[in-house]
Image 1 (cartoon, rainbow, N blue to C red):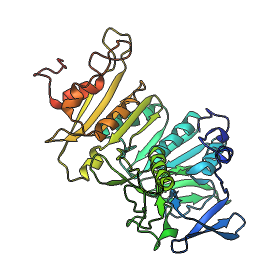
Image 2: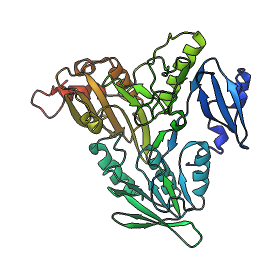
Image 3: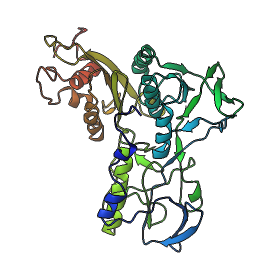
Image 4: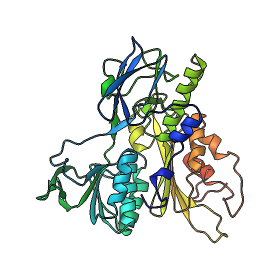
Length: 408
């Protein structure tokens, strides 16, 4: 989106040629529209509308998520785009070259990435979201307040707590205005980034699914049909902080599910179990880099657990090093046991890899006491005497002995 690569063709980890080299047959421009578990046959629709059947011994489904189309008047106007997958990415990227005023509907990961790219390209860009904050799924208010102020300084206009009511088109059918319950915004380009829904409607009555359309799978990625496995955004994933299930929604987790499903199919028996995850993610918005894993204020409130949290801000490097960049941190933990359940990190320095440490800590069911004294290296140009993760746990434990400074 920011023209850091010349072509979308460069953005892949595998393609048809690499699959061919491994002996994997790929069928592009083909859509599976039906599955018959009794006869073990899938029906495939080709791009020209013709269909054919393909048999299987075992089947792995990965229908993914589809962008939800909001039931808003004028949503089919020209120059209103979704942002999901390669095709839409190319359209939205090319639109950046001609757009002058853009409205992004949705302030999540996808929405802010597009908004940043458009703002940096000099486009008058507004983000509208029904939520009161940017990125409410990933970051708490201590972080998003600063991010929103920073985004405004960079020229990005954020309109929280507004619901889009209508897209108004001009005489040629192209969008020219976005109307919300609180105002109107001129726009020659609208990007809809309001989330996705599982692409599983065609599987209704065939596989067991949740009420909101996710395929139910066991710990081996096996569906309610013994010879059908499923992986990706259309399934739920074991969630380490609570022990329950949660939607994946991340490519990293989809890849892990796919490996588990493929390994079990190849083995001829269920040998590999899907490990629990914490939903670890990282991104940047202009100068700030941030990352999160596990529970935050919003998700913690939806559990039955007794959860406490601690926010802490400190320098990353020692005082005698000429680098005064700070890190903002927050940790969520079980009040009685001190078991760590979630973490958020943000800084102008790239500290995002540290969230992987926190993900491991959550999976290992470590406590504040474990993290407070955990062995991390010290090198003044890279770290502080007590790593900032040590300090965060120490602050949560209240180990300050009456001082407002850490005394370790």
